[in-house]
Image: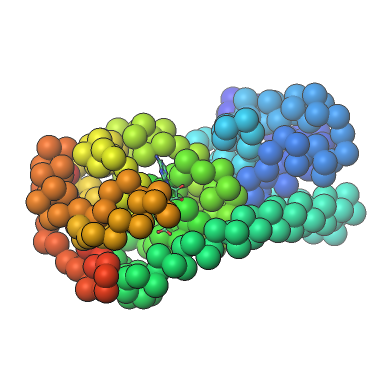
Length: 308
Ligand SMILES: C[S@@+](CC[C@H](N)C(=O)[O-])C[C@H]1O[C@@H](n2cnc3c(N)ncnc32)[C@H](O)[C@@H]1O
């Protein structure tokens, strides 16, 4: 009863209802919300604080930016969604807000697209060295299996492609990446309604903002070669897994393509099965069968481990 009353009190004000409606459509920064509402930042921040305190919105920091989204869990999450559903579709002010939100999304998408275009050439060069991406994705899907997954973590998510791949079978998905530019692309890609249960967050694979034993399936898809200390990354991933939770690593077999170091900042020229399996054992994982897709010159490997 107390929670309900607190939620209703917090939402019972025109600007706060507008904020709730906007944050139900995606993750927005204070600056973006201020632009949409045409109100001063301190005022918008005050309203946001009340909505967060009542549990209707969730706040999270990404570098220098603070984002808000509608709560997905907790006692007030249901109330937040219900209130948004009750809002009239034909309200002039809300319609105008959503129009401005669209403009902001366009601008974000443009910035993300520019960054992607600038780097896409480099990525395409690497792709040409190994097997087609669709084959890699297909094999990963097969290995993980079609069963439903409670919580899913994609480490070094980049554009969020692996999150998208598993969207249909995942209850809750989180993608972590260190690069704000990549996260901006991922966020744009995941803005569709069917991806509401997927989120991306800024985070370092060596020290992830993820609770112990909270993840059922974790993936490291073409990320580990950016690490000079893969054992630390694997230990950190294993920390987040529930008992019986699974880690899948997709990366290159040990190779001699030195230019990937110089031209593409790869820290490691692939890995041997022995090295990855040893890291897994040290991290408390039981290594499973290893699979590969032969490419020339790069072979893609699929390593998996289960938390004992
Ligand atoms: C080649 S991309 C792969 C992206 C994605 N996994 C995919 O396969 O589409 C490698 C990603 O790892 C991220 N990355 C590199 N170092 C990281 C770190 N220490 N913590 C988190 N992400 C990192 C990069 O920002 C980049 O987005």
